[in-house]
Image (cartoon, rainbow, N blue to C red; front, side, top):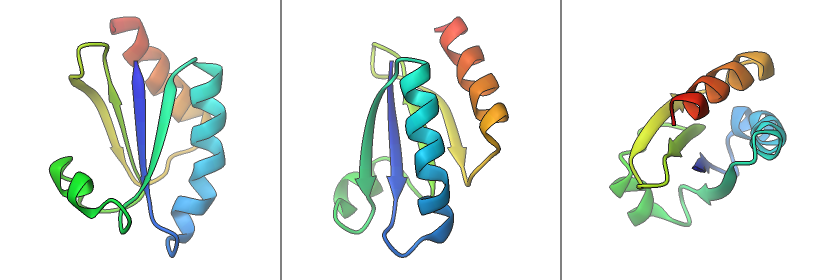
Length: 88
């Protein structure tokens, strides 16, 4: 499974949530890719990113299985990703 984190340099919630995302993805052994929405505008539009921060998880077939817009507490993120990975 892969996780894609969409962020922006000017976004304070993105900066606050990024270390949480990195930590939880490492713990869950998810490959994490981080994209700045301004630097990767065409890719961001293709992923239908409307606001930041956004975290998308894809299964091994490349299908989106989870999306969160905004930040959530670390325990909630762990729980959500654990459920997504269990259902795989």
